[in-house]
Image (cartoon, rainbow, N blue to C red; front, side, top):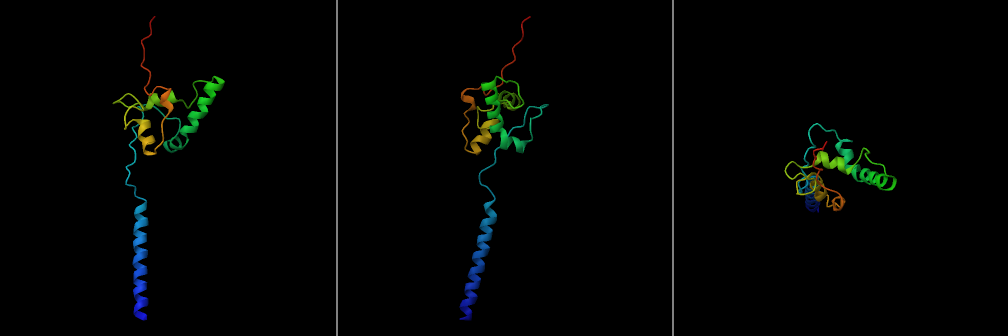
Length: 131
């Protein structure tokens, strides 16, 4: 009887160790984190990266509502401002290729980007002014 109790104790201990090892590995993701390109040199974002990751959808929606419904333009959070600073040097866009600024995080999070169905994903080219 005593031998059987020791066996169950050993089996129970092994199961606990195995479970602990599995749970410890659960924090490691096999999905690589997105590589987000840095903004254009010499620019300052409107908020720190963790805030922007969490709040950019509501910031942009709030700005959209102010622009469309109240005619307020040029506010702090604008899609145009994001595109100007974060367009890729390789593609010239924030949403043209898998490594571009918006696409990298949105594909990682499995979130559809519908902003660029209406808006340009590339910064507007500077046109020489005629005098």
